[in-house]
Length: 237
Image (cartoon, rainbow, N blue to C red; front, side, top):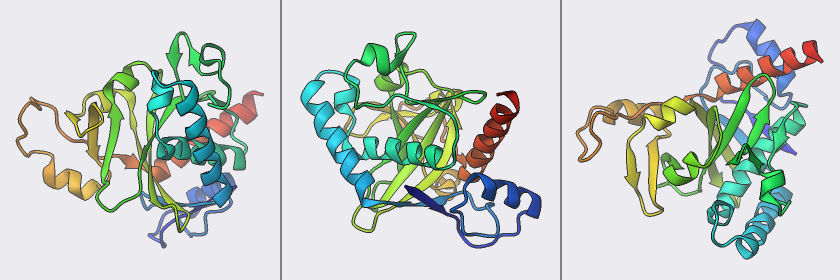
């Protein structure tokens, strides 16, 4: 089970608060105007991510699945837990199944999650550590995936079982970001922190041409999108 908490009251309207609490009953705040939501991780989910990481390393050393670290799998399991907890219908490309052509691809493209009436969501996870402050999407991996949105999750502490649902970007916004190799291959990137983006977005960087940093959209907006998708599906089906 994945539980979500939001930061303190910031004065959002009661109507939206009520609707969002119906989507995520574990939110213990009067409002969800704050852009970042804290996620509390049960220890079993961390163990599951470790198991998946070791499993995929052994059987797929040369493909994208084998390059995704434990934090990457943990981020996917956290997002999957949020969807399951709140009964949001979705198709999850679960890595437990070995046959990628059947279980992890659509139209010969990898995917993470598909939510009817919303689209494809790719989860990008930032490992724990104070210096890990960037959203990054490996360029080669991104081009081998199908997605409409990228979701950013930051692992705060595995020891304390805490993470953050930081925000999201549209596919076109990810592809408009600067590209840089931080040690794991070329990656689209921006800072997780909106203020850091604003203070650095016009800084000249060699090789970045006209591309500039973009801030993530608030996590509360993603929750609203999930709520809307759920309502449409309930009405339609």
